[in-house]
Structures are given as C-alpha cells and as structure tokens.
Length: 248
Image 1 (tube, helix red, strand yellow):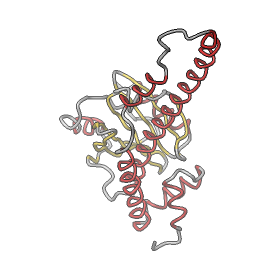
Image 2: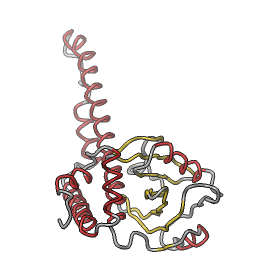
Image 3: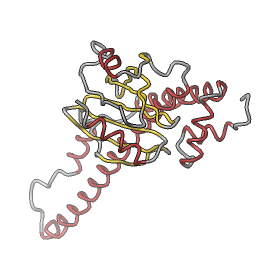
Image 4: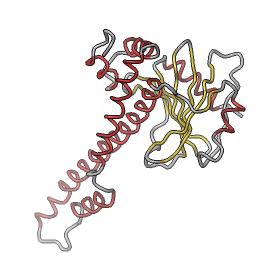
C-alpha cells in the first residue's frame, strides 16, 4: 500500500472489526486515497467470490426438510411401556434441536444478508464511480431506475434537512435487482438499499441494529424491503429512515 494504513487495519475494516470511530476515519481516508480504495475494493471482491464459492455446497431447503422429517418420524406401533417414557424425552430433545437449528439458520441468513450489503456499501465508497446516475434531484434519480428494476419507489424531499442525495445505481441481493441510493450527511455516505420483499433473503426482522461496524435500519413497506446503512449514529440512520417512510 502506498500510504501508512496497514493491510491488517484495512482487513479489519472489511470484516467489521473496527469500532465506529476508527471505521468512520478509515472511510473518510479512502475517499482521498486511491491506493486504499483500490485495496478495499479488491478485498470486497475477494470476499464475495469466497462467499459465492461456499454457497455451492450449502444444503438445499428440501434436503434439510427431508432430514428433519426423518428424525421426527414417530414409531408406528407401541413396543411397550419404555416407549411411553421415552417419547416425551425424545420430543423435548427433538424440539430443542429443531429450535437450535432454526435459530442458527436464521442467524446465519441474517449475517449473510448484512455482510452482502456492507460489502456493497464499502465497494461503492471505494469505487471511482460510486453511482451511475449523479443528481441531487429526486425527480431525476427516481425515473432513472424505470425499466432497470421491477418495481417503483418514492424518494423524500430533503429540503430543510441535513441529508443530500448523491445519486444511485442498480444493486443485486440474492440475484434480485434493486435500487442502491447514496446520501451524504456531514461528509459521511449512507447507503439506502431497496429490494422486493421476497421473504427468503430480504425478510429480516425490522428495526435498527449494528452490523459489521455499521448501523443498519430495516423495514418493509408496500411490498418492498428497505435497508439504511452507514457509519453515522443510529439516530441519524433513523432520521433518514423516517424521511423515506414518509416519502410521497
């Protein structure tokens, strides 16, 4: 790397291991350092390639269902009083295992979605061309997406707020196209992702959380799933979310 930012620190940033202040400082640094921006983009691309390769061996839902049905099959006949004692114990064990598998699966799915979104956010910040349509006018940005994604959405009027619309581009989550909008707040970039709410990949719990050093807010509205992500405070994230929710 051409500057004094170490590779380990950049890797920690990409893996979400930096605290919010360090992550914000490095984000600002990358906007003015082509070397670090290029290395960050290369790191994100590598992560996405590894993640895609790992999914090749992920068990299908039908296979998991088959295994679950197999282990929960009840005995066809009563073989004695031992079964009377064993069945309740087995039911508790099976229920516990089933709950644990479901929780682990949901947690892994949530982590995968947030990881993909943060990778898109970081890659955009590191890119020389972060947006494909450059405009602060919502009436220019919104029509640009027509014919590029299979849905429409509303953008808020930002007059009187601290937020500025930078532009947008088409993004993909689980191979589904959506809108990726970039807003600026006090020299910080915030990503807004909008996808169709399909339930499997985008159907996550609504609310604000922290994912990989970024604050994230998510909700569903009119059949769409919104994600607002950035290295600003959760209050700033919620303020932009409220503007998007009230947009007409």
